[in-house]
Length: 337
Image (cartoon, rainbow, N blue to C red):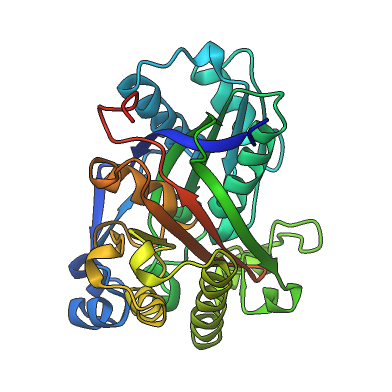
């Protein structure tokens, strides 16, 4: 009996209309368009400005985009997972509300959070449910309203992050396509360098905390940069080695969009040409859990059935890893061999 594998069969995306450019940030903090572009590769990012709308709004719209484009009956979805570092509220889950709003009335749902590695870890989770043989359709959404935890007086963070969501549908595949291998890691020693602390159970929000801006995300940029480059490169190297993959075997690298210099360093260590590297950081910035599915949506028309795609990400925790996936369809030719 052939092994059941879990393949991505559809993608969707949503980004807010409001564009926050580098030129606008020049008027908010001590920075410049040239400095941001040179240091990060980011030109602009999208911001959800609507009062009272959170990550669920982004997730719902990304899911609806996937459902509409692919004529999917949401009642056939078995599970909805939302990877997010910025849930609507502490409880109930963003995923349960999202599932109801998109009409996935027969699905169960849950949130998962591993910061910028959330969607990568979610891919492993979604695939495991499919591989169990008990579930046919798993909808994985990466959604973050990072603007809700960004301090727009802190140039370390406000130049980097944007809001957005992307979605991918996982289904059974019997052709050996889909998720082939994974290497996922965490190290709790890293949490002091990249965190959104207050509001958690150990860190009560008080008037004093609010005055100091303690509710906002914090990162120690140099430490995060160094660890991201080393660990993402190490993870992709391990995936390549144990699957006997050479650079010529890889059609695409799908890296977390944190910083263009990090992405270039990973691609260089893998020996990949620029044209094999998915990149949209220039127009979206770092959307945390949404970077990988936004890449898939943007590059879907260029992906071909059988393509080898190497995913990699690094996030708070620290958390990081790599996934080896064989793409399962050519757009508009999903039933063709």
